[in-house]
Amino acid sequence: MIVLGIETSCDDTSASVLQDETTILSNIISSQTEYHKKYGGVVPEIASRKHQEHIIPVVTEALEKAGKTIDDIQGVAVTQGPGLVGSLLTGINVAKAIAYARKLPLVGVNHLEGHLLAPHLEHEVPYPNVTLVVSGGHTNIYLVKQHGSYELLGKTRDDAAGEAFDKVAKLLDLGYPGGVVIDRLATDERCNAIAFPRPMLNDDTYDFSFSGLKTAVLYHVKNAGGELDDDMIADVVSSFQAAVVEILVKKTLDAALEHKVPAITIGGGVAANSMLRARIEEAAGKHGIPVSRPSMILCTDNAAMIAYAGLKKLLADTDFPYSMNAISRWPL
Ligand code: KG4
Ligand code: ZN
Image 1 (spheres, rainbow, N blue to C red):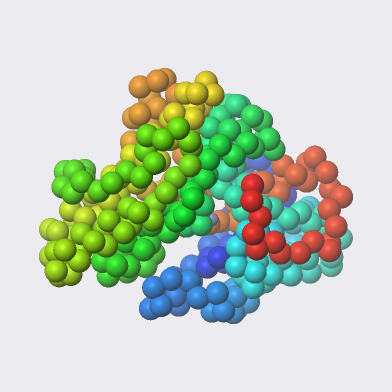
Image 2: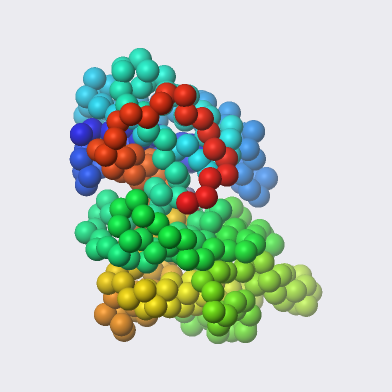
C-alpha cells in the first residue's frame, strides 16, 4: 500500500510517500525556522500562513522524489492533532481535498502516535516495550503492550523537556530552536560544572517537572551578573543538559525494569539529543535492554511517521469519515 502522509501540526511543513511499512520513498520537510526565530518561538499566525504557502509545493516534491504521481497514492494520512489549530487545519484541508477528489481513504493521526511509532520505520521493535516520547510539547513515558495499545505511565507536570531546552537557550540568548544549539555547545567534560537540581528524580512516579530546573538556570545566570563568557555558557548548557538527560534516562529505565520489557524506544525532537542517545543506550545496555532510536530526521517533526501510523490504521480499517476535524488538545 502506498500512503501519502501530511504533517503540519507546528512549524514544519512535511509530506511523505510511504510504501508498505518500511519503505520511505520520500520525506520532504520545509522548515519555517527563519520566519519564527526573530520572535524566539513559533508564532501561530505566521505558522499557518507559511503552511498555506508551502504545503502544495511540499506535497508535489514528495511525489516527485518518490517517483510517483497522485494516481499511485492509495490512502492519505494527516496529523489531526494535537498542535496549533490553524496549522493543523491547513494540512487537514489539503489531505481532505486530495482524498475526496481521488476517492481515497483518509485517516487522521495523533502526532504523538507518530513520534511513538517512528522507531518502527527503521527497526524491528519487540513488544511489549517502554517508549519515551520527548518533544517541544510533551514528555511522556508509555508502556506499549502491542501496536495500538499505549498505557501512559508518566508525563511532565509543567514544561516539556524540549520546551526547557528552548527556554534555557532563549535566556542565554543562544537562538532558536534551542535544543539543537545546546546539544552543539554542551560537552561531557563540563556536564558536572554546575550542580543543577534534578526535580522528581527519585520520587516514585514516572512524572517529570522541568520548570524548576529552568528557574535554577535563570538564577545562576542572574547571580553571575547576567554577562556570561563562552566558557561559562558552555558550563551552564552542559550541566543543564546533563540534568535533563539524567532524569529522562532514569525514569525510562526504571519503567522498563519495573515492567520487565525487552526493549526501549525513544522518539520526538529531544530524542535527537546526542547525550540522551548515548546515555540511554549505555544505561539500558547494562541491563541487556536494547534501545531503538529513530535517525535524526525521524526524531523531529516529519510526515513519514504520520504516514506510517496512518498506514497501520488503514490496513486495519479504511472506513474513516471525511468529516474529521482538527483536535488541538488530544492526549495519547
Ligand atoms: O518533535 P518536535 O520536532 O516538535 C514537537 O512535537 O514539539 O520537537 C521539537 C523540540 C524542540 O523543543 C527542540 O528544541 C527539541 O525538540 N530538539 C532538541 C534537539 N533537536 C530538537 N532538544 C535537544 N537536543 C536536540 N538535538
Ligand atoms: Zn512533534
